[in-house]
Length: 260
Image 1 (cartoon, rainbow, N blue to C red):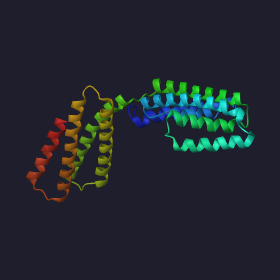
Image 2 (cartoon, rainbow, N blue to C red):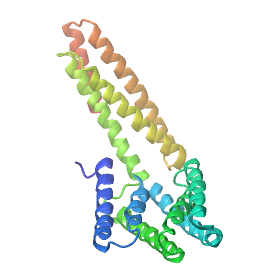
Image 3 (spheres, rainbow, N blue to C red):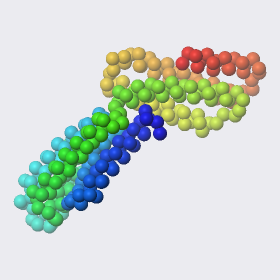
C-alpha cells in the first residue's frame, strides 16, 4: 500500500478503468456494451510503453477487422456462413501472438461474425469501433494522469530496491550472530534480487540509457556483493565463532552499511 509501489499503482489504474467502464455499461444497458470494459481491461498494461503499443495495435486491428467483415458479410451463406467464419477466426486468433495487430484483426472478425447474427452489419461494426475507441481514450487518460508507471521510472525504483535488498542481507547477517538463520527469508530475498536484476539488465539492453556503462558496472558489483553475502551467511550458520570473529562481523556490517 505504498504510492511508489508498482503493484499498487497498477492496481489503482486497473480499478479506476474498470469502475468507470462497468458503471457506464450498467447505466446505459446498450447492445454489446460489455465490449467497452472488456477492451479497456485488455488494453491496460503494467507499463505505459506497453499499454501505448497495445492501444495502437488494438485500434488498427479493430478497424482492419471491421473492413474484412464488411467485405465478407454479403457473401456469408446465412447462419452456417457465420459459424464457419467464427471457427476460422477463432483458430487464427489462438495461433496469433497476443497484443499484435493480426491478433486484433482475428478477434474483431470473430466477435462480429457472432454479433451480426443478432443485429445488422452496420450497427455491429459501428458499435465495435466506437467501444474500442472509447476504451482507448479511457485507458490513455488514466495511464497518463492517474498513478502513471513507465519503464524509466520503474528502472529508477529498481535501483533503490537493489540497495534495500543489500540492507536486508546485512540485517540478516547481524541477526545470524545471535539467532539461527531463516532460510525462507533468504530464499525470498534471492528471488526478489534476481528478478529485479533481470529487469534492470533487460531495460539497459533494450533502451541503452545515457549512463549504461555506469549501470552495468553497478549491476556487476551488486551481483558479486550478493554472491559473497550468501557465502558469508552460509559459513556463519555452520561454523562456531569466537568473540573476536563476532566482533569482526559486527564491524563488517557497520562498515558495509556506511559504504552503501
